[in-house]
Image 1 (cartoon, protein in one colour):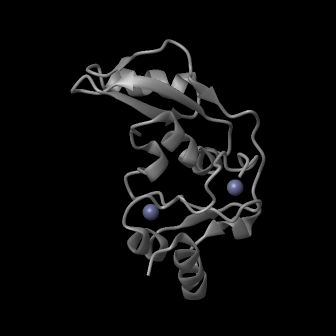
Image 2 (image 1 turned 45 degrees about the horizontal axis):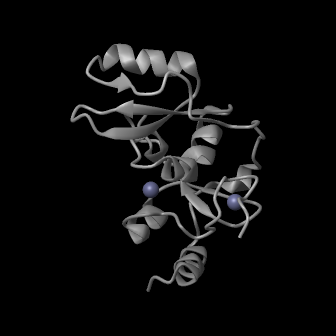
Length: 149
Ligand SMILES: [Zn+2]
Ligand SMILES: [Zn+2]
């Protein structure tokens, strides 16, 4: 399977990575119009969302890049950082300013590469129906396609 031009994944049922039932049932999702992949796009009351979390690999960060784009309504950038334990993590930011604000608030985090390791090629708006809570039958079908009972 080639990389999906809309959601940057070659695995159309890879997400949610963990706690799939909980995520699909309780969180707002982004639905890729090309490959049908569903990506968590829930923003909580503190403004936190899944695509904002640190990721272990660049590839996993790319699985969430499209959700970050639609939340920010913008292209986004992935940076490689060292977390508080010195581990390499990947984080998605809207742009350089967003990254710098984060680094100012978290002085114990450091960039391990000075420039973004991946930047959205472009930003395309999504249709309103692509960003919403799923219907029970959609959740069942997606989980079956994912191989989860
Ligand atoms: Zn979720
Ligand atoms: Zn896709």
